[in-house]
Length: 537
Image (cartoon, rainbow, N blue to C red):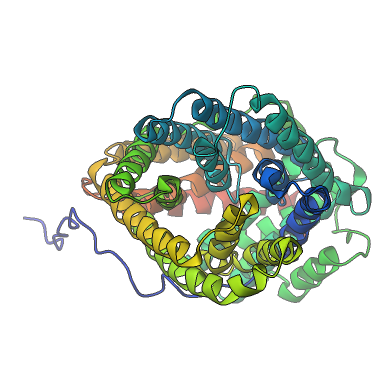
């Protein structure tokens, strides 16, 4: 008879959190860059329209300008590609909305189209990891365009405006690369070094996951940066130093790791880590075919389509004049699991309700004239991006009045009605959207955990075989080490996503713990072997 203590299965319905949902985090180390970028991208087109007396066209120029919000953490070569796709995606969503608006006046049909477009945008953004801000800005523009008075003859001109301002946003996004071409890679490496130093100082299990994720994010950034220049090679060696610290935290020089991180955030040359090995594993990884990025996104896509459609229909049934607000609210909720979706719903409701109070206070100033209206919108653009990294609800306090003021570009709107409709649509969208998330369960989350477990075990076995060889192929062990690290980070993210999903069978927690321990021991062994061959921490 076994003496093991039985472990009861976890409840099928998990408790929804309230504590900590509104807690403010630390600001991003580049919070001012997207904030300034969006102001620079939005201001010239809007001020030009103001001078021409055509603020009614601002929705179309805003569509292109808001693309400047994206890809700030990517190396500039990768950012240029990502921004180009964002601009094309934005114009495509806007085009679908404008064409639908010109072909039908049926609000039910328009809401249905908006829900389907939102689901496509959510799926593509998650699959390609475009974000923040992800699909929400794209959905806001495409949904609003569905209810903009339009004729087919006007569509090409309005799309041209969006494309032109999108090109301007692209220039704004990539221009800093002329002055600090390796800025994103330096920041990613600095985060990895700081995380490794924090783990070495206090090697708790909670810090381990964050540190390994930071190191993995640095490798992903470096591998997407294009040509391996001398600067990039120096950064790669620093990331290896972070890996060494994770493998042997007791031997790590925490002060040196933090000093390197501080130097990378400044304008000084990249610090030269000792032992200039060639890192042949990076070359092998660059030559290997890319891993597929598509995940099991069908449940989230269905949630988005169903939740957005039902939210829009409910708004129509209540007689609200702008059902796209409810649609966008529902679209903004959907995260990796039900628990995170609930948290985002609470943040959205709180932020929007406070935001309408801010709008009520600011609207007398905005009504002083068109110039005041434009300047207020620019201020809220900056505030939203400056604050949203602290917590989503804090940024929403600026996003809400900005969205309400944008409706006044086409003409005066009665503030009381705007506030009432926004509050109703926020509550309807959040409630209906969350109900849809509960109704459409992600029953394959457990399967994804099993697949991630199998990937970790395969990667660990492959790495262990290479460790046992007296003379593995040049770079093979380093490449295997990074593949194992990637698999471990993916496993942790998958388990956390599945743990917050409702109606799931019990997760194999003991297998996960064993796999993670064995994987990290193998990673440490690769580092120790690397050090014996000439690399010192």
